[in-house]
Image (cartoon, rainbow, N blue to C red; front, top):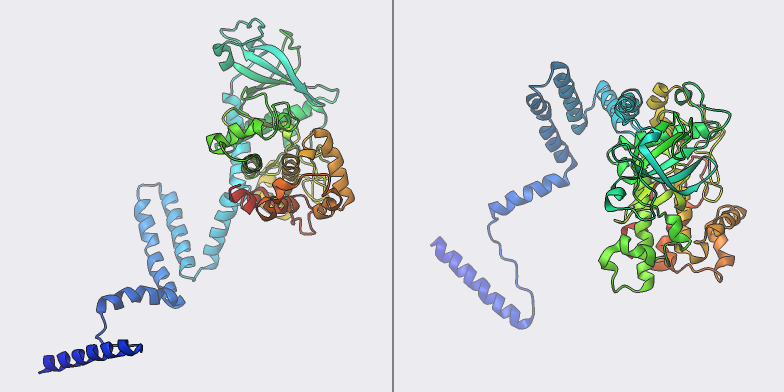
Length: 503
């Protein structure tokens, strides 16, 4: 009887539905029994919408962490296993929103010493353990190991040569062309200029800036060796092989001279691309930077994509370098080499300073190229104290880095390179000095500088895509504010739409 009643009810409902469809009205909702399966599916969604349910769920999950960690570390030494279990308990308390004071302190210390930038633990281990071990194990070079070839360039602090590592201890004959076997032995040698000041005893631990060409060469050897010990950073810098002081005169190498040695990776720099030595820009770089995907693109799109590729790789290199607490202080096209496989690598670390150990740092003095240097001219404010001993400098490095933001010095230089690559009239090196002077006269307001230049310069690459490139340049080429911020860091620049979106 019940079934018949239901059948009649459904039948009448269907008939009503047909009549309603004829008149265009909406059929009434049927009162059907709820489906348990749908209710079960809706339960997690209701729990996710309730913060208290989320907290309860997180607490129940986190409660099992200490036991899981204890089981996973059962075979570890007792002190390590105990420490891991304690940290797991601290994390579980945080997940349950019930942290203890000691637990929060332990987690804070763990973050500060291991995860903060630059990491105190990494700085201390590198300076006091890895650096001495590397010096003991490094290859010992002498003047008899090399054949000097042509001079590639030079400056106030040294002269750069192409050379060969001698095979079987015998010098190679000087020929115009190198054989494939000789190319594998090709190196770059830099002779550090000597001066009367020499190198002070225990200079690296003194917490001061290099004084003279000899100490600058010594600093560069230290910086190159340090970045080579970091697996991520070594990929974005020239491959450093070692350092030696000649004990005799041989083949153009004079007794007492200091030499730094790198693997030969390229003799072309971004400066060569800017001034046209490698051919018209951007065609001279688009092939190695973009590959075959650029075929068929129009000239403006290819130029924009090339600039983006170069700048993205430059900011990646700076981000990795800054993670060690090192500020380059001399970022410019001449110090960026271009490899045949489209990589860019930083060179010339003689002006670099290591804020994690205080090496080559003095708050009142700096080393810079006025064409690309930031307006503050110093990586840290002048009221910053002198560098303490390395053990204390490494311990306090995250605090110093967070307060002074020294990495923004290199960001400004990268912004100058962005302008140089993007605006054809600024690509010649001579134009950079006048550009920086004009920008200074405008109070480092790039928009103000642009107004009278709009008719004489081509801003099309920076104005593409709604002016994303111009926006990035404005946020790089500006003054620091009273909080030592206001300019994008390398990691922030990598998140800018100009570098994230395609050309």
